[in-house]
Length: 151
Image 1 (cartoon, rainbow, N blue to C red):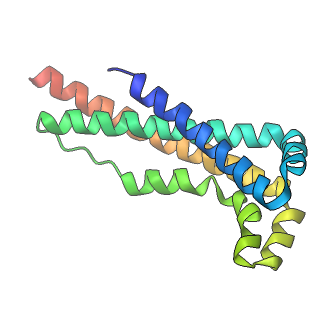
Image 2 (image 1 turned 90 degrees about the vertical axis):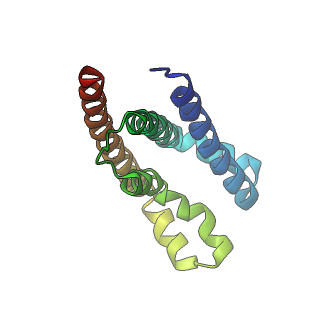
C-alpha cells in the first residue's frame, strides 16, 4: 500500500496543530511570550503535535484499507467516530489558550496552574488514540489479507 498519503497527512496535521498553537498563543500573549512558552514546554508541545500527526496518518491509512476492502466486498468493523474522538481529545490542553477568548477565567486559572498535568493527560490521550487506531489497522489488514487470499 502507498504510504505517501498517510505520511503527508501526518506531517500536515502535526504542522497544523503547531500552527494553531503558535497562532492562538501569539494572538493572546504576543510573539515573545509565545516563543518563551514554547521553549519552556517544547517537549510536551512537540510530543502532542507528533502524536496527533501519527493518529491522523494512521487514520488516513485505516480509511484507505477499509475503502480498499469494501471495494472487494468485505465489511470491516471499524469505528471512525471513536478514532476521530481519540484524535480530537489529545488537544484538550489547548483550552488554556482559547478560554480567555470565550471568557472562562476560572478555567484558564485552573489550566495554567495544572498545565504540565494537562500536557501529560494530552499525551496519554494521544497514546490511547494511537493504540486504538493501530489495533483497527491490524484488524483491517488481517481482513484485507483474508479477502486477497479468497479472491
